[in-house]
Length: 101
Image (cartoon, rainbow, N blue to C red; front, side):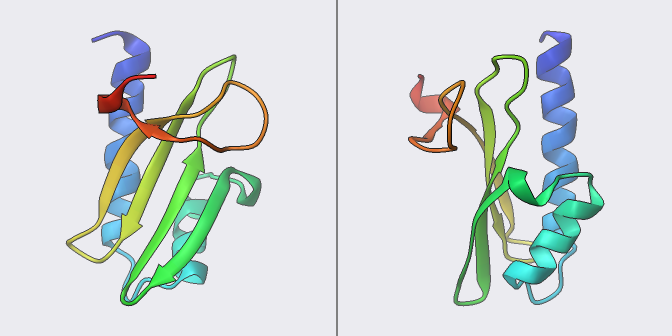
């Protein structure tokens, strides 16, 4: 595992722990939790409540990278999945990393 991959893995765990810790996850609470990890509002996309679950995407692209995270805040059922985005432009056309580029 490269150093960059290791750092992404550690960061992914931090995001997951933050989402799991949000009681009654609303978009506002999820945003506040992600802001607490240092994510700026302009990097948090698609915050949407779906019943008791709030979904979002995080734009983690830097230096021509394509990494993003798809997150679901649902207490202990929270989940974070790495995804790919275009290297430039708006965060769109996301694919889970397991599906390739």
